[in-house]
Amino acid sequence: MRPARYTCAFSRRTAGRGCCSSAKQINVGDSLSNETKNSFDVIVVGSGASGGWACKRLSEAGLKIALVDCGRKHGDEDFREHKRSWDLKYRDHAPEIIKKTRPVQSQLGSCNEYTYDWFANDLDEPYTTSPDKPFSWQGRLRVLGGRTNVWGRVSLRLSDLDLKATEHDGYGENWPLSYKDLAPYYDLVEGYVGVAGRAEGLPTLPDGNFQPDMGLTCGEAKLRNTVKEKLGWTITPTRTANITRPINGRLACHYCGPCDRGCITHSYFNSAFTTVADALKTGNCTYIPNAMGYKVLMDSDRNRAKGLLYIDRISHQPREVYARAVVLCAQSLESVRILLNSADTQYPNGLANSSGALGHYLMDHVWCGGGAMGEFPDQPGKLDINGPQRPCGIYIARFRNVPGVPRSKNFIRGFGYEGGGGTDFNWDAKGFGVAFKKGLMDPVTTVGMAGFGECLPRWDNYVEINPSVVDTFGIPVLNVHMTYGENERAMCYDMQDSAVKMLETAGAKNIRPFVVPDRTPGFAIHEVGIARMGSDPKKSVLNQFQQTHDVKNLFVCDAAGFASTACQNPTLTIMTLCVRSMDYLMGEMKRGNV
Ligand SMILES: Cc1cc2nc3c(=O)[nH]c(=O)nc-3n(C[C@H](O)[C@H](O)[C@H](O)COP(=O)(O)OP(=O)(O)OC[C@H]3O[C@@H](n4cnc5c(N)ncnc54)[C@H](O)[C@@H]3O)c2cc1C
Ligand code: SF4
Image 1 (tube, rainbow, N blue to C red):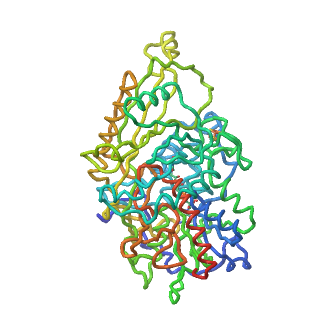
Image 2: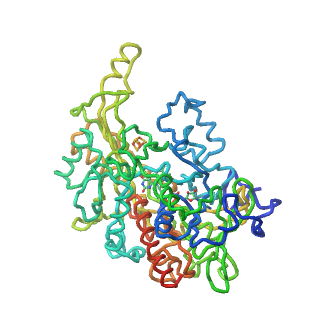
Image 3: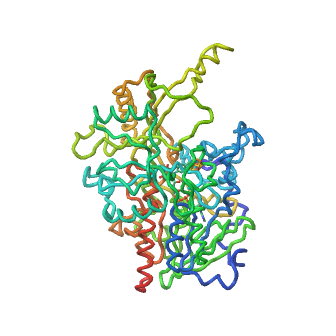
């Protein structure tokens, strides 16, 4: 019978299956020769948004890097953005088949017949939750580049309103750094990534080093102008990691649309063909694919990380790799899983966990908690079934609980909206035959928006290792406990009401509001915070350079270090922090401190 403390439909228990905790090194990985096995300066675990930057920054500076990634090799030959559904075996119309092996991953639109083989098999790699606290762990990619293969590319800066939020409302902990520490690194990252956007001069959503934006549709422009004039709120073209001008051999976007199937012209940001490719070009970065990180190996006498134990996903054999420093960039839940699985006698509750904070304060944005859609019959557009597909829309900057306006009585912090619209066929046309065809050709211009809300850090939202369940590689899995609280729920109603207000202000017709105050956490795919940064080692796991307080040559450079979520999408900040931390690591290595 299933123990009461977790639910998992696809788990394999340790019982009768030999766990890897007694695994010994038997061989170095296939792609790793004996000469190279001890010669690394830094091991980087993960090839996604953060790992790619860590590899690029360090290897371009001349350091020898081992890039250990659980994904397989992946590149242009796997990209499917120009493939048509009739070229697929099931015409992209057989979700039940995808669900058989990816019952969790396929809850997300981007895991479909085009791409499902890029995602983890949920049966092989389960996780567990409390029965009353569902959590949907989305976006577990198993190809080079990780989530950046399929991400939505919305790229927004945080401001001091976010980094020092505690100063505004007294809740939680400030980040141990300020906007001025990040600003030059944001510039650097945006310049390389290529972020199309429009400067708006908002102190709460700082402008960036932008390429020309992708423009607005007529309905969006009307909404933007009226809302600014009458409500003072800012609607801007999505700040998106799609390039509108060529850079570094990457071509400008040609507006084909489905970026989450890859891009052979390399026009969106995917670490596989940008940062990682640059790192490999240096000759200083050794890529070890299909390598599932399990534990950080410690030299306990010197309290230093000395390497990584990983499981080869093909042979299921344990292997080890060594270096002077270890940088975890495996996505926050996976990195913290590695740290918790690395518990030893010195760190019985998880490596670098003297504070006890490791695993706690899990956050994920409230995804589409509320919003609305409306029609703009006075803004008719042209119907075109093969027309350009702009790969972005609009972003509505946070306007609640910002300086200079009365505070909300119902919640602290705030939300932004993602949305967009255009002119489409009238798919709701009534009738049959000629009448239906005629109705279909009657264009409908709409604009819609859905809120992304800040999630507060709470101790009782946490992850731990489930000692009774292992994945197919014999690695104990995570048990995730997360719920949204009253603050997040209250925000959802405002997301709906404010969306309606904006559409009404702009004269939209047939407005359709929605609110979903009970979203399952995980769907925003912005999990952050479970090895949080802070200046006090008793209350945090990492310092402002994402170096663990406890083990000086161990860094966690994905979103695990976030002290709060803000309401902006996290990835631009993940990359920015990572570059800053890698510069610090190199300085510490030069100074002989690491
Ligand atoms: C559909 C979708 C839409 C999104 N839209 C946006 C958006 O619009 N804007 C935004 O800011 N963010 C968005 N995100 C989130 C964004 O993709 C992530 O925040 C970002 O990629 C996280 O970077 P990372 O380096 O932490 O992890 P990832 O990019 O996921 O990289 C993690 C890497 O670690 C590897 N790995 C995992 N576990 C192990 C292990 N045990 N051992 C070895 N390797 C391991 C993986 O193979 C992967 O290469 C979206 C995500 C998804 C899935
Ligand atoms: S829309 Fe642009 S970025 Fe997206 S796949 Fe097409 S060309 Fe590439």
